[in-house]
Image (cartoon, rainbow, N blue to C red; front, side, top):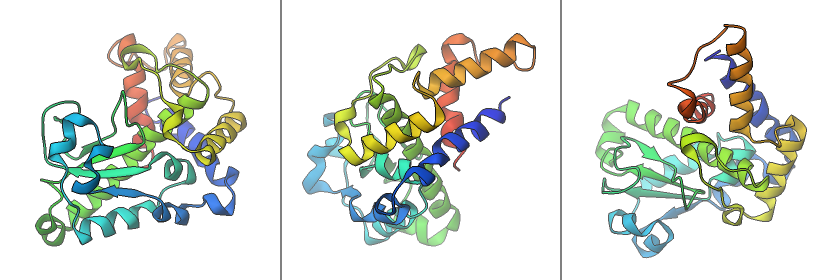
Length: 227
């Protein structure tokens, strides 16, 4: 079951490729992704503004290249990227990067201390890891986008409301198309919980760290499906 749902969500989120028009294709991503620098640090959460660093040309290039790999839904969901030094607050334990929970849900933070030019040039694994982090976190943003247009709260310990105003009309329209084509109007994470519970009833899977943690595990499984 642990491997079933990533496949299921791969099908769900993958439908955005078929639902999208040419203008929504992955190669449109670099035309509007905003890589935040010190002059635009006010675009991130206030507690992280002092930690924003100016991206290097190599860091910016890797972000742009990775955006070309994203399916359209993740493309639309990810609007901003910021390189930050490790600081206090949400995400300070994230080694590679994170997508905020309660605000700025269209943003990804990347660990500037880890993805230095020296590391990226010396160790090929760092560039691959940064690419995987962007894809993983963009999928978290895509799940929040999907939840935002159906006005569905994130359940369990993830309880919060996704804010649809963070995304433009094109992104919201694409999210509606994906939801309609996959019949997930009750919420993607809720659907995961429903499928998991159905398998548990037949003894085909177990609980993920207790009922309160089911949606957390789903959120990670969904994002890992694209790595």
